[in-house]
Amino acid sequence: MGSHGWALLLAGAMFLMAYQAMAAAPRRPVAMPFGRNYVPTWAFDHIKYSNGGSQIELHLDKYTGTGFQSKGNYLFGHFSMDIKLVPGDSAGTVTAFYLSSQNSEHDEIDFEFLGNRSGQPYILQTNVFTGGKGNREQRIYLWFDPTRDFHSYSVMWNMYQIVFYVDDVPIRVFKNCKDLGVRFPFNQPMKIYSSLWNADDWATRGGLEKTDWSKAPFVAEYKGFHIDGCEASVEAKFCATQGKRWWDQREFQDLDSLQYRRLGWVRQKYTIYNYCTDRSRYPAMPPECRRDRDV
Image 1 (cartoon, one colour):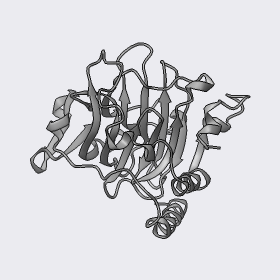
Image 2 (image 1 turned 180 degrees about the vertical axis):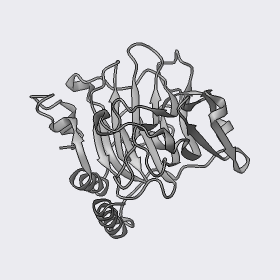
Image 3 (image 1 turned 135 degrees about the vertical axis):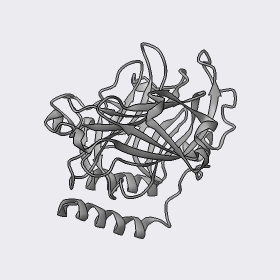
Image 4 (image 1 turned 90 degrees about the horizontal axis):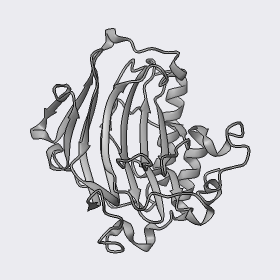
């Protein structure tokens, strides 16, 4: 790893050590075997199982990537995955973990990990689609090497907000701004998906860096497979347990001041792109950005 990467790691470790004892966090995820909540979706032979099915590997080669999805559809909840990303030269590859509804005006909540040339830091891109409209990209560096160990990537989604977490650090908030004319995912149940695939037409330096197939297979490792959500049929328009789950309670309608400090730290130290501040794309700041306290 280059000097820039080590500086990021050191700054991150020092901040979190000073901060860890103070911040409130969602409930700790409960690890499940893969088959409890998930099924493969394509290229089944490119998924390898270990530890009795509690851990899997996704393999990408020049023929195909692979992926999996949740058995159920969910309308709100807390969803978490422990992932160890593709090590070494992963340029051109994308590891994705996301929620999505299944229709033309779909809602979607995205984590996308964009591969790198050896020694360069991974980029984590997040996005939120509502009613088929996305273009809300944010990109950050991580404050650790995500290929050395498993780290937790989570989404908490309720009627009030969507929060993206990395190891309990909030890295992004998307508030319900329906009153400002911004659509919010509230009535389309979503499945959870994950995949490892080749996207060397855009993933690394805008497509300038191509996948080096001599390094294949590229392998991402997964465990955890936590789902604590309101399970619903695809036709369901509301959650039958509304107001009764832990992630639905008042203390999760907003971040507290300490969590906002953590978010501000991520925004100040590690953010490399934020659609909210991109005046070439948005001459007027999108209305949700101020409420999200994300500028």
